[in-house]
Length: 53
Image 1: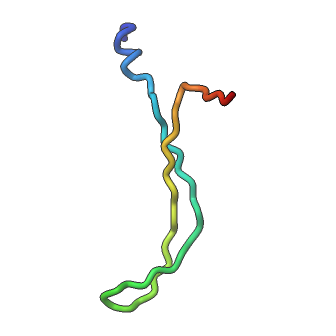
Image 2 (image 1 turned 90 degrees about the horizontal axis):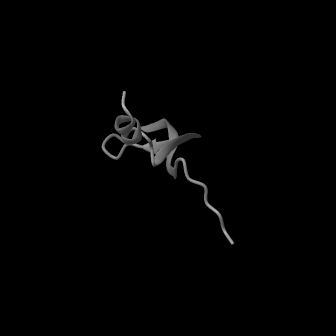
């Protein structure tokens, strides 16, 4: 792999997946209550440091 290919593969953002727990949802068609796992996906900057002054 040459230097140009390595630079193309550097990520600028990354995703963080967090499990939030479970919640109950109601199916509008049947009225059935369904318990589902809830996850959150956050996009963050990768290879970058933020500084606040």
